[in-house]
Length: 64
Image 1 (cartoon, rainbow, N blue to C red):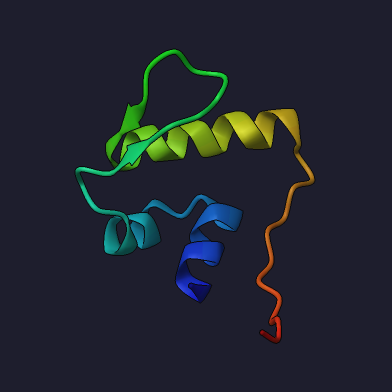
Image 2: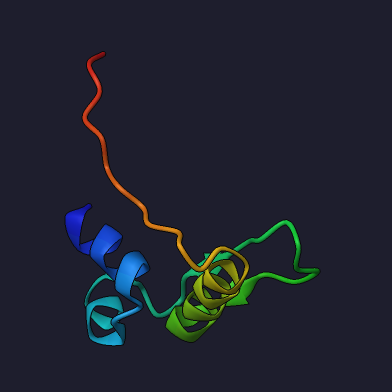
């Protein structure tokens, strides 16, 4: 999970290639069609960063 959060926070495509499956399908509510592959996933992240340039994801521990 930490590598994924590092990827979405930095956009580092090397990390993305390590952890994102090439056939990933990402559905975004604002897009009429799903995005596919690492490039599609990165494009959605870029759109989110464009709308919220200060965005920073974190993982917080929760008790169950």
